[in-house]
Length: 468
Image 1: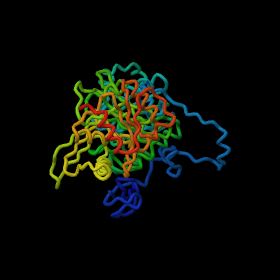
Image 2 (image 1 turned 45 degrees about the horizontal axis):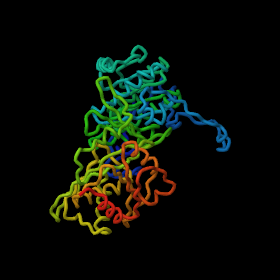
Image 3 (image 1 turned 90 degrees about the horizontal axis):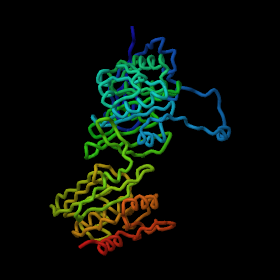
Image 4 (image 1 turned 90 degrees about the vertical axis):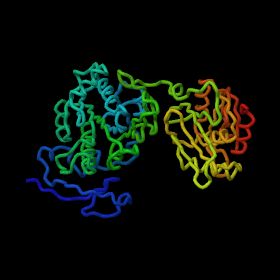
């Protein structure tokens, strides 16, 4: 008879304790411990596999001896990758799916996680033995989607409805699968853990087992994960630390378009982003995202500014809109969609303190057209000028782009990859650019460049070139 023991596991970081505690010693969070039952007995067949080697870490192996770093530096390590057949997915993964890597794909319900991975494994199956394990949808549902996507290598993709990770590994090993998909981690359970599927301890253990199997057998594992209502990955944070790559599939304001972004990548650039369009035959890569998100109105309006936004190695042009209305000084509204609300509050404070433009008695609404979330500070100057444009009721010409980081002293700081951003702007018929003066060094472009050093200087330029 299997014996069990009770442990308490933090839902945020996965730290375990033999008794309940109020504050987690691992991450400092309060009231995050949940009870979990763990089995002490392990099936002998499972014990003999590398997946249960708890002292070998997530890599699943321990080197025989110690070597000096200089001995390894002379050896050129090359990563072997699989082509997924989807250019945008290859780009986010750093050039393709690395052999023996574990990739975690998260996204809201209906975003298309299963769709894009089914497309990928269809192409991968033409190169290596592949398997798809589903714990959410039935085999018939997956088959129906495959028919809709016009899967070409269906006879080479092995499909099974399974929720036990040990049996998943047994089945994958029996066909010598080199690429497997697990849909999804929240429906999986381990025979060594008596907790319910989706619990913190189960997600942690299943992630650990799959990672060890991937590393010791050189198998690439693609895992689908759920998200919480605020858009963050469900489950313990330790799962994100375990995997090699974490990517997120998100919807935009238009139901047709999806963005996929890497939050972590051990084999490539983090924060890389690709844009897809959802069609009846699956996800299609969008080669020119700027053409989608930059749809200018025939009649320009105040409060609209275009910025060259850099995500990873890609650059796209986005439109920032500002609307400023008279509000109650005791309770003003400041709404930001696609922008950091705390940073926007800071920028409005800079406007008030350094430029004597008051916003404390006004309701301010900021929006990034297209539903893209901007996470870089190069958009600061564009936000400031959009607010000023809305307050002064002046129109920024449609051939002008703006970029620059704003400091608390009102100074304009440089942005990285200034030349690359301007090159992308030129492709879309922008002729003038308001940029930080510190970005002028070594800059080569045929655009009319207007360098500025302070926010006050930028506002003066705005009034000079604006359309009355």
